[in-house]
Length: 139
Image (tube, rainbow, N blue to C red; front, side, top):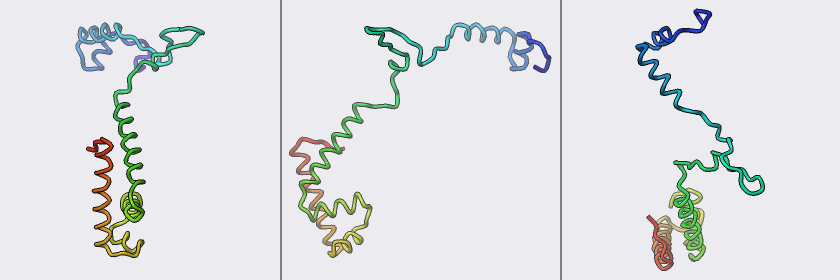
């Protein structure tokens, strides 16, 4: 643009702080590549069903098996919590889901902090038992 004309290869190479031969190699390497739209159709199937490039690319950050496993673990843990006695279930809900401290849980349930700790311990032991009997492994 400064020259108000197309630059020569040697001028571009100089601007990039490269030797002309190195710039030419870069051009050759770039010429061997191609760009494709993710919406480009790869295959047309039965009934004009189209398969796009984006349909076959794998999301490297997605771990579907782990996501399914985590979902199943949460479901089984929820079922196990539902099996707890009412008081223990309340302690678990207030402590883990509401984020209250043992002292705050005690005030809410009008019991001592040490009793909340006892109920929490009983609930955790009971949950471990439920989940082990159901062959659920929690890491």
